[in-house]
Image (cartoon, rainbow, N blue to C red):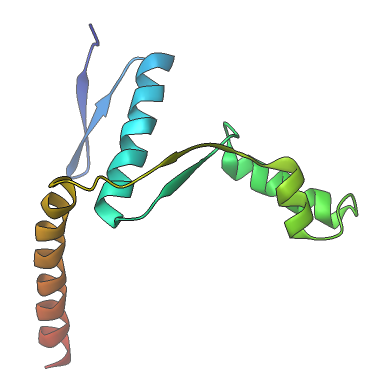
Length: 115
């Protein structure tokens, strides 16, 4: 059983989960699937555990002359661990309704600001 403790930080609540690789792996997969569903686009998961650090390593490798360009370095140093496809059932519509409402609110806010 996970020990969930809520901590207040400014105006939002942050849930702190104990370090557990199984939970972290599940939450990352869930986040990627939600992103694919909400955007209606495939999400490609990198093979690297730290993709941000890998991007700096790629930049450094190109800068040092180890690779001729970014494309060559990216092809050699990075890979794909999986692809998350958007759901085709009613899940997409579930995300679409709130997004349309968000777009309408943004349009109203722009109209108020511009007069």
